Amino acid sequence: MKRYGRSKVSDFLGDMIIYRNLVPIDRRLPLLADSWQEIGLSSSAIPRKTTPEYARVMVYLLGQARQLGDHDLQIERVLFVGDTRLNDGTAFKNICLAGNWTGMAFIAAEQEKPYEFEIIEERAGTIFHANRWSALNDFIGFCEAKNFLVNERTAVLLDLDKTTLGARGRNDKVIDQARIEAANQTVSGLLGDEFDPQRFETAYQRLNQPEFHHFTADNQDFLVYICLILGGDLIGLEQLVAQVKSRQLITFDQFLDLVEGNTDRLPPKLKEVHRDVFNRVNQGDPTPFKEFRFNEYLATVACMGSMDDSTPVEELLSKVITITQEVRQAALTWKEAGALLFGLSDKPDEASIPSIELASQGHQAIHQVETDVVGE
Image 1 (cartoon, rainbow, N blue to C red):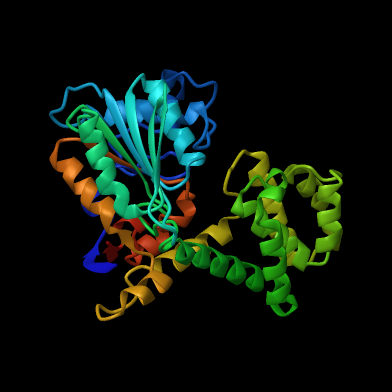
Image 2 (cartoon, rainbow, N blue to C red):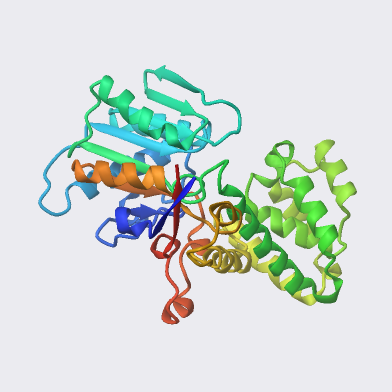
């Protein structure tokens, strides 16, 4: 593993990026609120990454992006780079189907066992699944052998979290640590002297498991809010777990209603947070715990480019969110070939882009923050 200096994601993606709210950073592209009918959606509600509706939004945005400048070309192929076979693989296949495009995807997560890869060929597209990020070079060779051209008619989609930044299996734990630090800071600030860090950690780790995803919706805002309420003694962790397992509590909305019916037992600060989260959830906001996400943004950028150039690579990977050199190099190559590069992130906008106040102080979106580049 080697350090390749410093860079920013915007050095190769520019502002061709969307975060969870599907608001293009490049303001030349249309907003979902203005284009949902043209796209053929039933409403302007923000779809999640694995849905067919998300794929239709992406196909529309990529078509609009390709027509910017002097280009008057139609996209015919899509190339996808991600880190999860289920979420990214599903998004890739849906985008291929929605655009009626041929596609190739590289999905990787670094593992200590010997190098291996699997090729999954389906009607919607081909996935090259590997346990090394360095296998991206093999993937490029595979595409060439299959005569899959990367040129002006190709859209290259780069997942940001745990792919372009904080490669899964290599550097992703720093992203998780920043989120947990933000959760700790948020909950401790609200509970004050009543905050018990060990109790919070126990609740967070217990509920942040697949068996509880039907209850938390695998949503970190929901999870941190639940842990906050547990810290306020309205309900105990074991009591909550028992109710979820017995299906007395099935959804997060049911938990919200439970808290709503007992707000008289909440301290003033928690009552205020609950009211805000309750209202935002009912308005369809997918990231209702704004204070937590604000703190997550600060914790994330604090982990980028935060160590000096002499820091050993192993220490960088354990403490700094780095750009994945293999992805960066491939992106630059594909960009040189004329492909349209576009970044996707399921990270909330509030955890990725500074507030107006922070921006006035010089803070930047995470794709514009300089950090170390590390790879094979």
